[in-house]
Length: 263
Image 1 (tube, helix red, strand yellow):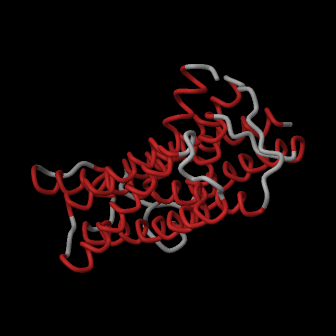
Image 2 (cartoon, rainbow, N blue to C red; image 1 turned 90 degrees about the horizontal axis):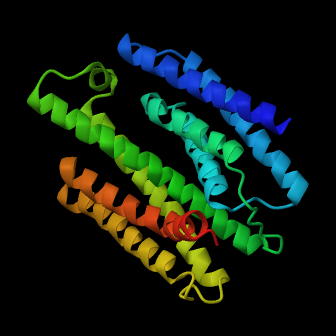
Image 3 (tube, rainbow, N blue to C red; image 1 turned 120 degrees about the horizontal axis):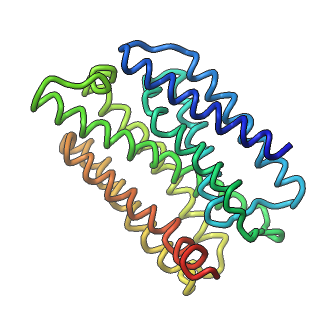
């Protein structure tokens, strides 16, 4: 059952991305890719739910965590498409979600379970994952915004750029995503300080410091947008810098310990 669900999810993720790529090529927008993506995320969710029911905990190993985050990113993107023109991001996000799930099947890891965590720790973990997922989408949006700005200034834009909303709309969407992501990042940090005994313990200090620096960067960017009208390349640089710090905070140690040192 698990393998069947994972295979269904991977195939529909990839098929959805192919349909989106075709729509970009033909400069149109259809709902079929989104329907396929909803099938993919439902199958992906069932796959994870079966593991949870069997083990009474999620597997927080490196690849499994990356797969969970890719699922949440895909779900948040699909929810955003209900009232925002961001479906073109699926051409990047959906294949990555399928890839992460495929890696879980191909490279099974030793489970890292948290059987004894309470609701406070669950709330901290959940807000952390949602914050990272939202800011992940914002980072991809920033990359598209940079490409769009460059294409419009230098030479006739390519099909992907022509299929995107106007530049001002793209910037507005970016700051909306940043604001929502910062809200959940704030909840994550506050819950960490309240519910974790020593947030600056040796195994947590780098995560805490990098997350706080990222919070300062995102907050400064939003403040600069309101007070000084920051936009364009400034917004892109600050967004990507903040997300890179969060990426190091969330996955830096797990990558070194689990993948490189096999601990």
